[in-house]
Image 1 (spheres, rainbow, N blue to C red):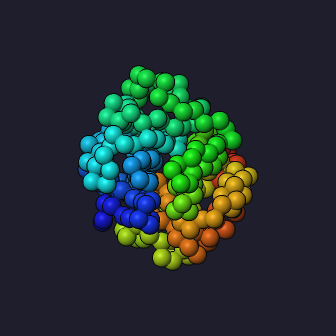
Image 2: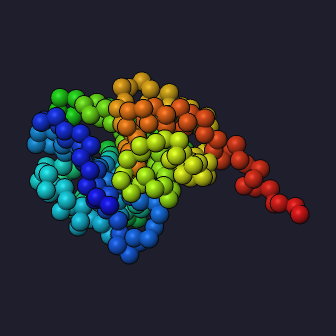
Image 3: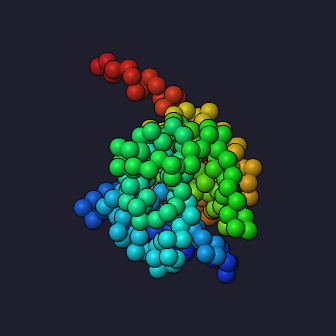
Length: 256
């Protein structure tokens, strides 16, 4: 599997996806993606992952831009496969660290000692200018984390969706792009039913995403949704039934 995928490039702006795994966990079926946005001499890293891939990702980013020019590192939520290497990135770069305000007090448990580097997002999200465009932090609360955001890049029109869109064991994960949504859909279902809190949150996220022109949805796990497949995913996700809708199955013992 290719560990690096160019998502967008127009001569000024570039988006790259890395698919780096902990070699000791290579058999793990939930593949992990990390992302880089570059415009000019500035960069944003999205969901850089755990300490086990820090050195490899740092080197991979360095093939595109000096890591010292990373301006922001965004953490969609608090999980170790997203934020586990926050201490290493805080030492290796001077970047501001962007995350939900819910998680700032927990980052010391990952070894982060300088909390002044953190930009704490309010629940409604926000927007940061980025060169000739902007990045928008879209609320994705309870999908699956209670403090969770997706990131929209205005120039590439990509939604970096975090765990939303994750697929398990899909053959289409091998080439990192969905080319037939209906054949990919069964591999989405069990993850989203278990990890998404309730349909109301799914609908709220889709409503917010539809405020923007979206050409691609890039999840932290699994494969990319482009064009018609991105639209098909939004239509499907809007109707996902999550934990609340399956409450009885989760809590009531089966009586034989």
